[in-house]
Image (cartoon, rainbow, N blue to C red; front, side, top):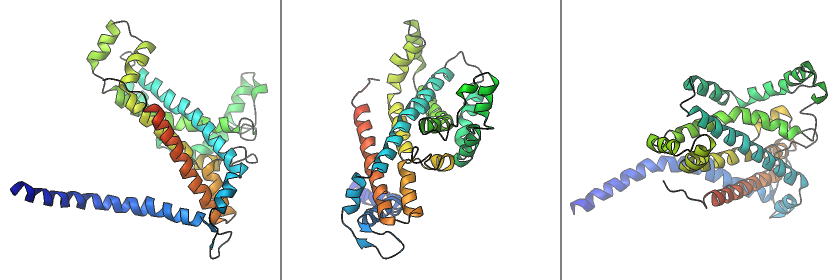
Length: 297
């Protein structure tokens, strides 16, 4: 009887602590999502009373070429950033974890510093770097005799997405580097020393020892990178505004443009719901693929 009476107050105490978080989650995530779904089922082309439209907006979305081209740009950026942010972050973390590297704390701070700067500020800086006339990139290329490679980087529809990927990689690779350094720090030193004695050094040690033992951190990093790139907005808005034309348009910017520039709230929310569906699909697919392999510890 005494044990039973103790469990009830404990359960109430747990509920009291959980309730505020659940309320915040409900009002900040669940309620806005449900409201967006309701808006997406209405015709709301201007600041007037919305009119029920059923699934007509979603039918238009399926046939919207700009939506699919924006999704394609998101997917290309996802590929570039997975290689750049996660890949470079892991390589640098592995190098910094080596006993041969000195001034480890200084190097880690310098590489992490771009993460602390506002994305808008960095986007303006990279816009200046890419400037055709006075940008640092073209100035350096002309100075070393490669003037033919100089380009209007943000005005060329064939390379603008790749140009946008560079500042995204530069800003965030340090974030993933810190994650991987923490994961590598959990590997027992005895395992690493035994591997070195068995001849596993350099990339052999990385592929056969470090990556398997930090696989969970790799999965988390990949999922964070994918979710971040699917909602990317500010970098593209500042640097290209989706141009030239719509060659660098991404999903979040497209939803913003339709909702607040074209004042089509109904279809803008349809695009937003489409972003949620696509993002969840990609995340679950990536989790399924990455979760299919397990490493023994």
